[in-house]
Length: 97
Image 1: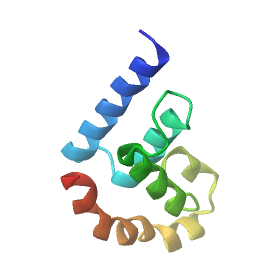
Image 2: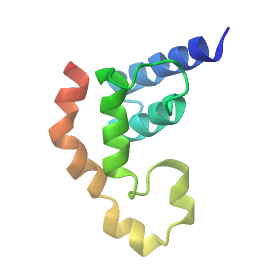
Image 3: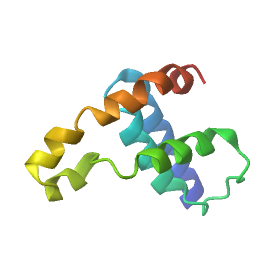
């Protein structure tokens, strides 16, 4: 299986996790953006990956996923509502898109 096919399969699994509610939209966007990074043959104008790139870009300063272990507990407490606040207006756009 080529890298392109592998990354497409991983992307489909992440997307299904988002739809099922196992993965947050922001965490999924971070993973999908990492898979794409412009190197797997997807056109830069393709709106599907660009949606996830935009979400990742808008939220890359939030403590999402494994990086939380490096943040101070008081900072996490202060920022824990930020992902939910950001994702509320985009949830339906991503899930319906």
